[in-house]
Each structure stands twice: as structure tokens, then as C-alpha cells.
Length: 452
Image (cartoon, rainbow, N blue to C red):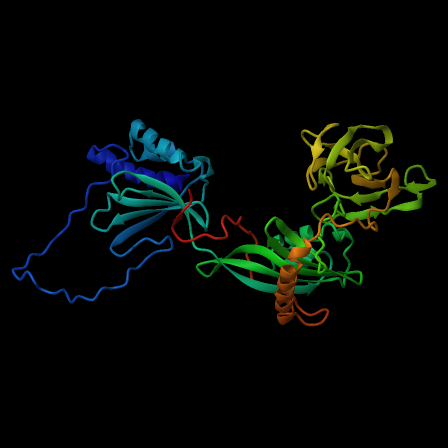
């Protein structure tokens, strides 16, 4: 907030000192001229290239001061400290609120005050830098104050990363200096085909994806274009394809990797404490009986996801099952989530839920020896093993687009093979990336392009 505020304040100081209205531009800068008695004199002076800053503005003969928003500072307080009147503060704040959400101003954000070197008391422009890509311009160089949002130029480079999994995909990528966001993207792509909680040492992955840069500085992980995952001796492939209404990740045969149900009801890895079994020794009853689901040992309060679209048919406390949620996905499939700590807001019988939506939280209610989730799937009212069941693809690429898809797939395969890592156990190919990855705002951004 302070960035925008201080910049605005500087502009108001100008207005306050001159008696002009808040939206009136600063006083015109004094200009000098040289007269000559020879009217037809030809100017042979060499024109120097204009020097621009990261935001695309001229900085020659311009004083630029950078400031930082401090904790607990607000637009009003900053302007008030700079002795702007309440009327001035209201006027510029009201105009800014029509362009940008002032609540998005945060401590640590930067703003830049542009002033001609000989008139430092009159800022020509203020730039509030919301993040490394987005910024807001307050410009007094026109007839009145102009406020608009813009973005810095963004370009992408494709990269191939591969490696052998030691413990989990997330830990393997992070340990080798990769971005946690890349691991998250891969886990979502293969979430319908692979149970990431059952990954084991020796499984391998390879992916073609985009890295995004601003002024040659790494900005974040972009889109995954193609990926391969070798799990328990089986190779899974996924290729991104988009044309017309067809968009998503598809297998090499053109079938969608998306399935009717996710393989697991969590976003991140959690240990399987008890698998599906027809004859398990019950830990509290001390006798053998079927275990018609999978138990995941997870920390108390961990969000539980609905593995598919459907309607909640049950959300209540039910004896030994504890807090339970049941979801009917279609005529064939139903899923159940037991021993929950509680239910997510709005989850009740009759509620429609989407795949990946949080429906509850891991607990230890009912007949339970500790925090865990019992997850089960029923097909035509008969329990099936969630870890081994194979669901049909939700959609396929239309026949009239298969030629286009095959061309894209072959191009991705060539890139994957051209940057392939060495044999098993060799280091993963990675780029050095920061631990914190900012959100991508606009993949087709241009410097100074106003966001209307």
C-alpha cells in the first residue's frame, strides 16, 4: 500500500503546494530555448538512443526515487503524513479505487517516484510495483491524472527435466534444486492414473515444460507440455493439446488422462497405513474381517478431497465410522470418507461437489486408533480396491483432430529425447529456481501494455 500511497502523496504534494485540484497535472517544467539569426541552420546533432527503464519509461535527466511500503501503513496515513488535505486524499483514492484494488497493497512492495532532476518537488509519474510483473502507473504528464495497470514483458523457454525418484516426487525435485510447483503440476497431470502415495525408489520421470523470465531473470514455472512417469515398471505419458473446444492432457493414443475419479483423496503424499483387504486383522476388534477401503495416515486436520464430481448423499456422524461423507458420482460409482474431524463449509446431503474439492478434514472420530482417513469406492454397491481399479478415460480427441494431435505429440517427443538425462541414478537436469514461485498473471504480456 505504501508504494502507491507514497507515490500518490508525492503527486498530491505538488497539487497542494500549487493550489491546483488533486487531478491537475504538476506545474509545467520551465523550458529553455536558444535563438539564432540564421533561420535555415541545419541541425547536425547526433540523436542519442533513448534510455528506458524496466517499465519502458525514459530515465535520462529524470530522478527516480524508490521507496518501500512499511508495515501498518495505509494510503490515508501516508498521504496525511505528507500533509495532503482530506479532500485531496479522498479525490485521488476514489480515482485509484476505480482502477485497482487498494487492499492489494502490501508491506514490502515497492513504488517509484519519477521527477525531472531540476524539479524534484513535482513528480511526473509514480509506479506502484505490485510484484515482479504487475505494476500500476500514476501519470501526471497529461491534462489530468491518469491511472492504469500494466505488465512487464514476459518470455518463456522450454526445458527438459528428468530424474529418479528417491522418496517422493516432491522431495526428489526439491532436493535437486527444482521448483515445488513443478512437482505439484506433475502430480495433478497423473493424478487419475498414478497413486503418488505409492511411488517407490527407482520410479522415474521426465517432463518438457516452460520456464518464464522477466528481463532474463527467472520468474516462475510455466505450462507443462509433455510428461512421462515410469511407475512400477509401467510407463505413463501425457501430452498437452489444445484446439477448438478440445483442451487438456492426453495419452499417446489420444485418450484423456483425466478419469472419472482421482487415485487418492489428497493433494500431497500421505502414507498408506492399511491397504484394501478381504481378510484383515482389525486393530481394535482383534479379529479378521474385510477391509473394504484404504487407510491413509495423515496429520490431524489435513484437507480431504472429493475424488470425483458428484452429489453428497451423507454427511453426518455415524457410529464406528465417525464423521462420514458419502458422494454419489453416477449410477455406478460411490465414494466414502470416514473418521473425519469435521466437514468443509457447505458440505451437506444434496450438495454438488467437484473433483478435487475439499469436503472434510482428517480426524480420528468413531472406531479409530489415531488420525487417519478411511477411503473406499463402491462400484454397483460392491467395494473395489482404489489402488488397482482402472477407470475409463473421460474423453478422447475427436477423429478429425488426431492428425494435429499426432504432429504435436511427435514434436514433444523429439524435444524430450533431445534433452534426455542419463541412465538410472544419474543427476536430474534442473535449473536453479527460487523457493517461492510467484503467480503467473498473463502469459502474453507486453511491456507497458495497459490492462483494461
